[in-house]
Image 1: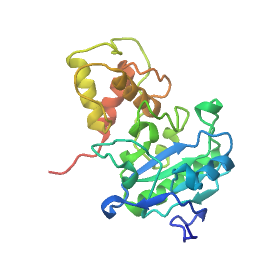
Image 2: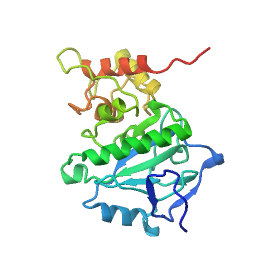
Image 3: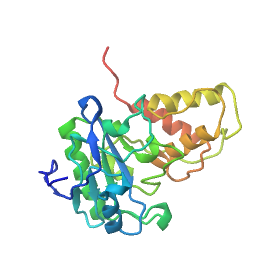
Length: 254
């Protein structure tokens, strides 16, 4: 791929050959955040630009806040894999993918540097404004691919992004005792929980069985919205936080 003019003025071009056309020529309406999960940023960037990897992203954010653009926003980068959100199964065609240099779970979940998070915020604000992306559609890779993916991880500071005007967030309900649901449970309360998760956007069967997949979806929800404890158990804190997130969504006008 030849050089191109960056869509985001704060980026420099680092073209990747791994891209295609967005299905139906659609415009992106999701921002999808990842961590690289590799030992070094240089190694991750090289991999994302290697033809044999068959993976890419639109933007790459280094630890020091430098931003590189690998794929034009109008093109379809290959970052989401098999994924789902609110009925959408071609998340690559629907999204702008941002890879954040961080060793992630394989590297012990290091903190994200302040300069890096500031750069992610500015990039998301710019993309969100230009494409009119709704706050609730700034998502984690783990949101659209529960069980399969866990990035950008429970240490990613979604609260800081929201305070700066990026993403959808409510303060998580405190962890306390009370009734909870876990793998193996079944019945109407589990079906109600699955329905709420589906309404928010997660891909989960609504069958009243707290299966391994339901557990994985709950863990993905916790990783993003209740990161103090990620165990896949739907306790009061998890369920109440989910209720309040749904209540905080913008109401569609009749």
